[in-house]
Length: 275
Image (cartoon, rainbow, N blue to C red):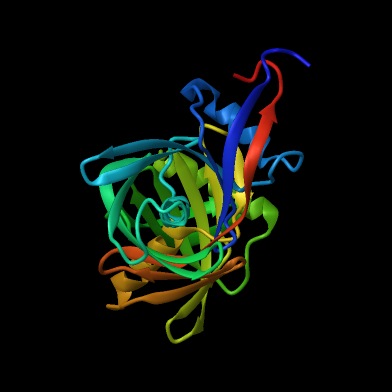
């Protein structure tokens, strides 16, 4: 066993089943993508995404979250908010501020404990930078929808009666990556389930890591859909149903909320030479 093996502490969070691993020890930025690739592998923690924490605690901001691809992630920062309360660094119901890669703006969060290791979290999201109608060809089919860009991530939302097939999803994601130029990008097909309930199946890519994942849920994608729908008709909080559960998205604040649970935490060993 080589002397260069490195042990890292981690915590795995599940915001609406969008499994997110936070690395609690310092990792060189140049190794983020490699470390994240290992952690997302089934041999390690089979996470959908990976972030790295740094404690600030200077002024109003408690922590900064740096995602492995430098993108912004709504679900991940909700999970960080839950972790802050789980660790006793803020009280349930107390408002506190966090920052995340992709945007410099401190965002407020409030957390309520609902069971051992499970929390309800609500937090503000960055304002959308742009919203515009987009039509594109993908795998021989024309898709029309709305491209919503936030700092660090962009989503293409389009109404449908059936989810695209794998070839179409990949072709759409490639097109969205090119059009948005964002650090991360998503394909958000949707249809109406009930008066204020919509269903999505998000497919998310991250440029720096090359990952493409059918996420169990997507916070920024949920808000992108809520903003898209509010363009057509003024709306309050919407219920966005996805494979992992329900996210509430409010286009007026803008904010999202969901349940965050913590299935495990501990340590992992990196192979020789990764860091």
